[in-house]
Amino acid sequence: MSDETNITSRDAGSVAQGLAAMWVAVASFSIADAIGKWGGGEGFAAVQIVFFRYLFGLIPLVLVLWWNGFEAVRTARPWAHVLRALLLSAALALFFWGLKYVPLADGIAVAFTAPLFITALSVPLLGEKVGPARWLAVLVGFAGMLVIVQPGSDTFKPEMAIIVASALVFALGITYTRKLSRTETVAGMFTWTTLVSLAVFGPLSLLAWKTPEVGHLGAFAALGLIGGTAHYLVGIAYRNAPAAVVAPQEYVALVWGALIGWFMWGDIPAASTWAGTAIVASAGGFIAVRESRAERRRKADALEAAA
Image (cartoon, rainbow, N blue to C red; front, side, top):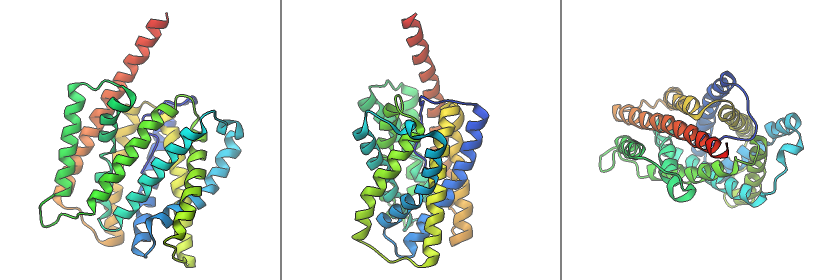
């Protein structure tokens, strides 16, 4: 799960760099999701998996701080960073918990309803205006989610509700990120998220602790390295390229999820999963394009008003 959607941070660069960063990040997140699902199957609680994710995520964090300097982390809004970190890490814990019970491709597909929640939440929380076209896209996207989940059918898994809850909490975190990123750097948000999440999930992991073997630690180290690096790359992607260009690239994760799920667990997505995924991805892509256009209009209006 990526967590910098719709960022327009105070640092910036090139579209090609943004796209390259996003492609690597998407593949990395898919591998990280698979490791999280594997960890659940090995008997580790989601809170412990998240703890290890951020513990080993300290390694890429050190590199980020070395590259950007501690000045990038300074902030006048520490509690805002804490709230954001809690929302995003809670969403990750719910996601790993849900993945324990559902196929990887299905879980990733349902998680991609987050942009739909973000659009809906932007009205009450950010005061943004959402036109009829985007509201229709939201409804179509949620219909796609129902196609994947298949409520009332013999194949319905109640645990899918955990993934939906994860997408909602994640959307809250991203909606808050959109406000925070107006004054904070990607490096700063990355640092605060890592440290706060580690401080919270360290004690929580003790409540359901299972002593890992060497192989487990190796996998969790990979999770932290891959997840932490991907997290930062997504920030770079949205910093360097328009959301309308970057956001649709995220849906390639659905293909990665299907391939990894088939390779590791022999899961073959049902036709309903592919159909629902296409609907969700189309709705999400449409929303990304419309929001990008709306953002350009807001900036143009602001410049005209200031002239």
